[in-house]
Each structure stands twice: as structure tokens, then as C-alpha cells.
Image 1 (tube, rainbow, N blue to C red):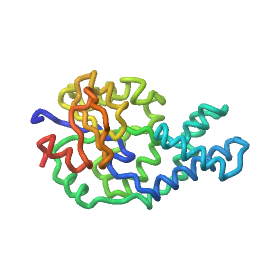
Image 2 (cartoon, rainbow, N blue to C red):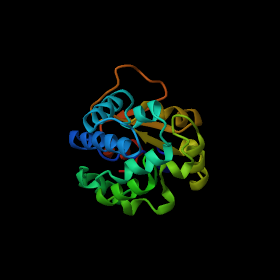
Image 3 (cartoon, rainbow, N blue to C red):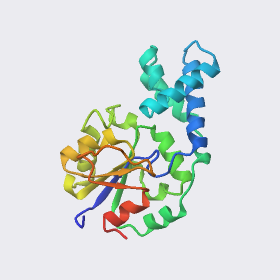
Image 4 (tube, rainbow, N blue to C red):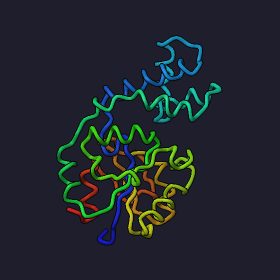
Length: 219
């Protein structure tokens, strides 16, 4: 992949790995968020619903959005403002690799911009992502990566690059469909959770973000 000029990064579980502590925190926060926005169940039930939603969909709040009349925008901001970035596990190796990188880097996350900025600060990666290279879900009109090409086309325009010059790095299989169709190189970061079935729209699979720089010929 010698022609690669940029990497579009997902944030959560891609630039860092979900820990059991963080997954548990997300589920508790999701339950409290739902209750704060009017879902009439007790805390234990709400947390259990969130846990099951995370296992099934990879998003603790999805069950509440589907089964209750909650505002997606309210849920998005309320949930992410309570996440604690201090419990994320840092990788100094990743920071050092970024320091030597010659590529352009962009964050495209389904999280909020505020969460992305806080998380990147904690991970010591904020210096590699200027303000105009961070896209929270609200920044691209809540058009999710598995539903629309919009944010990928927007990123191509921002950087002035062709799709073939870009890598999309992601931990969620379905979010790589549109980048693949556009002609980007698609990389799944699986952290050891290797998919059982083949997925033709995934060009490469890696254990961690650090490995992507080698694929790109950037180290």
C-alpha cells in the first residue's frame, strides 16, 4: 500500500482497546442516561438492558432508542458527556509511532466530538488530530458510517485525496462496507476477536492500531 496518504480512524475500540472496566462503565452510564431521559425502569433493569444491547449491537443505548421514544440527539450527547476517558488504556508505543508518521490522520467516530477530544487528550494522541480532522457523529449529520457514504466523501474532499490513497481503520465490520465500495483500503482492528466468517469488503485484519502503520508502509 505504498500509495497511501491518509488513515481515517474510528476511535472507540480502534485507537484503544475496550477493557472490561470500560464496557461495564458504558453499560451503567447507558442505563442512567435512559432513566434520566424518562425510561421508567429501575437502575438494575436499565443496566441489564444496556448490557444485552451492547452484546447484540455493540451499542449500549440502542435498545432504549428502539423501544422507547427518546430523542437520538439527546441520547447521543447525554451518554457521551458522562463517559470517563481516564479509564482508557494508553499505548505509548502507538504515540511514538504517530510521532514518526508521515501520513494525514482523521477521526470519524459515532461518538460525540467532545468525547473524541477528551479521549484523544487522555491517550496523548490529540496533537495528531487538528480540530478540522475530528468528526463526531453530530458533525456529519448523524449519518452513520454503515448507513451512508457522506462522511467518507466529506473526508476525501477535506484532504483532497482519492479513495485509493486512504485507509479506513475500524473495529466494526459493517462500517467498512461504504469505504470499500468507494475504493478505500479497509482494515479491521479485531483485538483478538477474529471474525469466524470471511468478509470480502475487508482487505486486512490486524490485532491493534499499531500494525496499520506497517501495512501503510509508514514505519
